[in-house]
Amino acid sequence: MFAPAYLDWNASTPVDPAVREAMLPWLDASFGNASSRHEYGRRARAAIDAARAQVAAAVNAHPTEVIFTSGGSEANNLFLKGAAAMMKPGLVAVSAIEHPCVREPARQLRRLGWVMREVAVDVHGCIDADDWKSTLEARPSLVSVMLANNETGVLQDIGALATQAKAGGAYIHTDAVQALGKIVVDFRALGVNALTLSAHKIGGPLGAGALIVDKRVELAPLVAGGGQERGLRSGTENVAAIVGFGAACEAAVARMSKEQRRLADLRDSLDAVLVAAGATLFSTAPARLPNTCFFGFDGIDGETLVGKLDRAGFACASGSACSSANPEPSHTLLAMGVAPDTARTAVRVSLGRDTTAKQVTEFGGALIRIVDELKNLAAMAA
Image 1 (cartoon, rainbow, N blue to C red):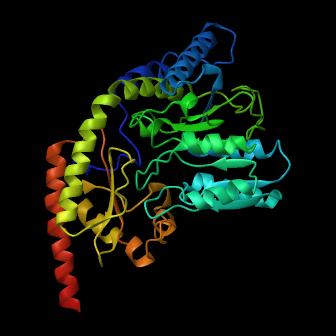
Image 2: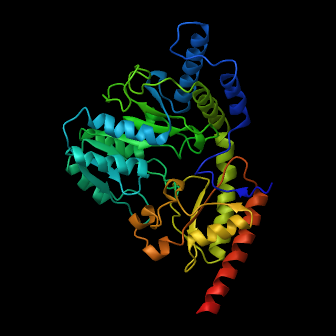
């Protein structure tokens, strides 16, 4: 069966073999409900506790600060809606480049009397200092700014933003889904009140995530029931997925330092090929993920190019996987001031632990060939 070279690691990752091995017993003989008081249940509870410790260790948090969820989207919703439910309606501020699972719950809060504000970014995708200052002067109650952007890979100075937001009395949250395993993610050093993680971005299973939250932050649960996860996420735990999440965190952190340099070298080599071929790199900010390249070729539709590359044996993306059904250009690029027609040319390549130098070289060659073909077709049609 034909399998394209996978260059879409920001969308999802293959399950790490060590993670699969850790999960298998919990899909077979170890099937107990962690709330049961017999031996099967006690073993399941112990496995969840061990995974909670692994996730906490990966981000320098305490295990009691880890709330398991079904993924990053639920964790982001839990923070924004859960915190808002415990407050009087006020101002909720999110960056203009947030993932839809942050922007949409923030918008939904408007039905409850909240005011939503999107904080502008500059041409590099970094928080605009003047608009940030203006936002803080408006005294937000809740703030959410992602640590690493899923499309551009650009990193925000969350530590500085958290200090400033908290000084004004706001709770601040960061979506760190794209950052874990690629850069150091330190809950204590970042100084945020809450932080979101997802298993399937780091070689773990789909359907597992976590909200790391300071226990001083009061949250109302999204799911009420038996009181699991400190009463913040009721429902019988998915033991296999949680165990896999813990194993994935441990493995991702262990290989991170070696992978950072290797992936950055591959990314830089691809950047050089793209620039030589006439591509626009949508962000070259010095602080960005080591594995992400976001680019476009003038006059060539990104979706068309991605389709051609797929048929040539390379799986990449035209932007965020969670927004692929939306025909509109990338909201991240529009927020950065990129013209809509240029934004529609966007293609994202994201590298991972199985990506080889050979794949990147072959991708560069195929890309140049396909771009030349599309340009020739356009010239003939003109």
